[in-house]
Image (tube, rainbow, N blue to C red):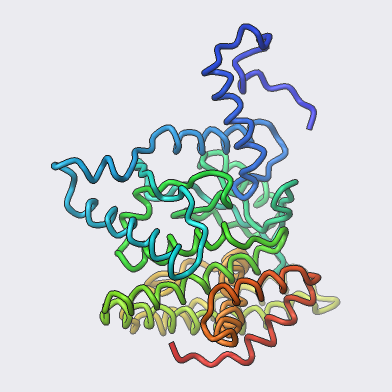
Length: 377
């Protein structure tokens, strides 16, 4: 990329005159902008800079967890969550064989409920999301922003082209092991079992990440999250947490079935020849409204909010694409773990072997595993 942006460095300065601390800061920002491709994708310097600046801000604001726990006046609820997080690190490393490294050793208090927002865009008459491609992690079906205003401007540019657009807050993300990801208040505000699950999910990304296959990566991490949480709750004798986790899993599976059914109807609609845009648009609205009504009819009786909340928002192709990215192959990965007798190292080896196959072949294998899976959580 060849472009000039003096906002990045504050102007042109010859290297001998740059203070070492400033130069190290710039080097961190440049490194972040190049490596944090899971958060980035815009080809402009301004976009990369906001991603790098946001990540640098997190690292600058972090405090060692152990130092916080040593404070006598630390908030009681935060203390409990930080102590749990320390235990999760040990559990994930020893029982799930995940690469913990320096992750979650530090804490950041955020001034917002999300750490960043993701932009998902899908053509009006398609279920295939737009992708952004990066030199390190390949193509991804979402783009992350620390700068909400910049995300909204990007969203508007896609809306103007009749894309379905979703800007959604993200509780956590992984830098894929490039940096020591901090714990933050997005984690600690969650109920304990959900914090545990989220930590496991993000650590899973550090272990296995297949370039350019969002659905594979997110489904894998979600499967490890579910199985890891099950073992955590069992180890701690948390029968109530187990029941609630089972309820959420059931709600997720029911929602996935609804989304798949609606997606099949939409795909048929989008492939119809000789249908005008207005008629296609009207029929699409009917299908999505029916999905929303079906979900709401079930969710009002659920003991906990479902994947779309207590009541679904106005749904679009973007909602369906994002939800399926995280859930499509979860049953298949869980079946693969079962076929390796719950042995995580052997399971990870099998997942890596799948990841070495061409995309079409590994997806076909996971679809077959999906079909063999029978839920006995």
